[in-house]
Length: 343
Image (cartoon, rainbow, N blue to C red; front, side, top):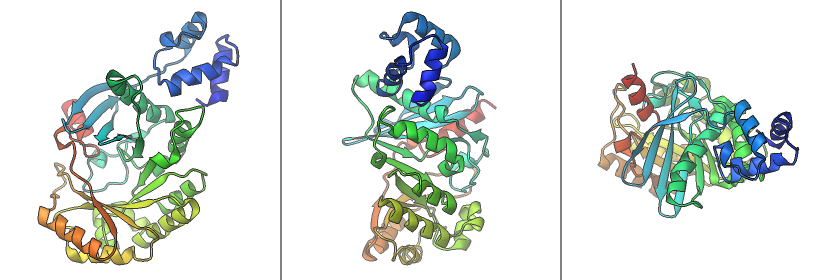
């Protein structure tokens, strides 16, 4: 809820309008999920709010620690569907990876998120609840511990749930909300050109990560069926429009799939696709094997050759270290395991 909506909730429960500011402080600054703990609110008001509203509608059904800084949460929603959120630690960074949908409609062959299809969009509240579950983990370590970065790269296509995403990010970014800087938030997309431009027009300076994963339309359509209605060039042009509108970094994600898109020739085609892009960054992601896809991870040699070819072509490239495989940390893998276990 925004301040106006919180004000209506407070006054309908018999409270004074100014209490809405205190309530927002408890919810977003202190990330408190229990009305009873909000001790500067009148007790009668807290009890009335607790009768009328739920602060947390989801529950953590599993929390798996990789032992190398990654904790993956399996979160059960009120209707029984399961989503994922991840806490990643790396040097001085604490990053949350959050989901925007239960399942996914994009059908990327190398990703477990879409293997069971799209169940539904998450509400803004369900997106934000993931931060409360992560906050509960961090509070056990230190009362003041909080995130440095947020990546919207979990289950689902964020721009497919555009309204839910924007409402949630508005609360995350707002001074009265979590007050989390837009420049520390990265939105990932499989590449929906119209929605990329819509995102650029929202007035926020989010970073953008665009999943290319291929160097020709034929190749990309094999890996990402929705490409048939978008096309590589349209995606790259929309990404350039985003950069020019926001002046924020655009990273092109490229999952290396063994024998599919991981040759030096692929690397050179990728470099040519991005040669006119301002400040092109490429994030290479060696595929985590997903059962039932028939796809395999690239060899170490293929990753090195691909990286060298891009570097020699003048592309800024980073290889994502494989983290959290022990906790099924690739998108959708933990949820897939839990849903299969529950039949």
